[in-house]
Image (tube, rainbow, N blue to C red; front, side, top):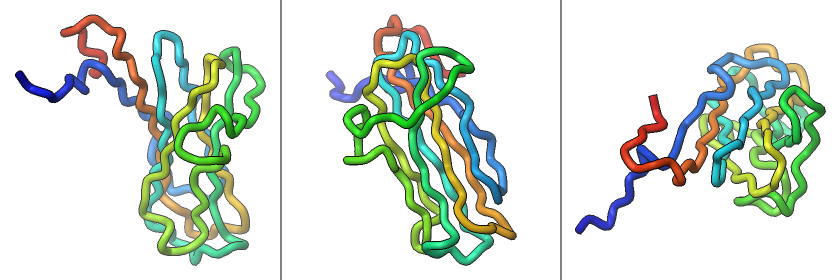
Length: 147
């Protein structure tokens, strides 16, 4: 008997921000958590075309809301898995870009978003995309949730 679990049928990976060379704040599409047992949001950074510093940086966080299209607010630190604050990516040096930053959400609101906030004037931009990985383990076996 194999000890490996069927990950393909128990998670769903969604792209929530198409790849873009960003020079402004980026906000993901909302992630609907209906029927979901857990979620992890990731911000994927490529190599920045600008020289990053404390004055020229990206800060990432999670926001939440109880209704689709409603007013999203910052997630409380107690509802975040993987960090002691809501923030999950401070990209302010060359060593910090070209990386993936992820946080889990354990709050009880239905919708979440990831936000990458730009500070300073980014002339050349930074490649960014975002994704959400949902745990849908309650789906019946053999009912593939991935396209």
